Length: 286
Image (cartoon, rainbow, N blue to C red):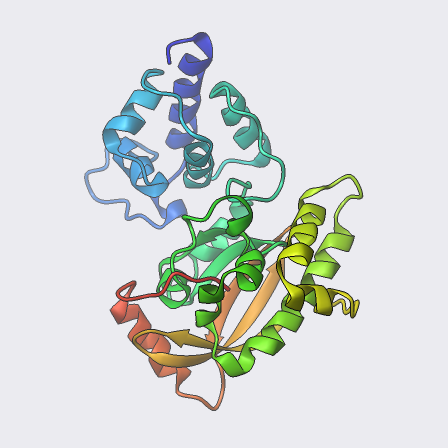
């Protein structure tokens, strides 16, 4: 890097880092903290970057950050949508359209996840692309951060990749398929008529999955607002949970959190999940 834009990028990152208190992102303040905001190494940790790389960014040097890194920095620094777009432009990256793994997560939803350390929680798009997960959501559902393109959507994987269905007991597959299709129809109808993301996904699934095509032809429509689910965990077995949804104002994002179903041993299993962490979890989705 090295242009005036990249110099401004470094200055902008520093300014946003300075305004965030450690408690805002779940970090201890510590007795010897010399700066009011976050340290460079703390931002790097939150964004999944090396400290050396982040230092280079603040210096306005180093290589051009990727789209995924810009999205990660925006989340780590709790940027607003306008600030996130500004960061993309400073990095000479196109501002991404809504949806996809680099979509902007509202700082309020990030704050809610931060305040739910004992509950599996994640933010997804209306097309079931996972944007961010807390530690317990990764432990329960698997790490979903590595999927790109159409595969980023769990609905796409559900109808095109048999291994995605390992998340649920086989007896529940038909119910899940029907719910996913009805939810997708509702989400697609809610989007702007000029939006092509949902339409492209539907066309792909109609061609790739006879099951999807048959269910789509039934014209069922229903948002998934709350569900009782049975989730297969490789170490704990079947965990029965309530999956609750909080929708953003435009309906494009949802905060999901999972609580133990009454009348089951799921509360004990979720407590055990916190101990097990991410050991032996399957790569899956929700």
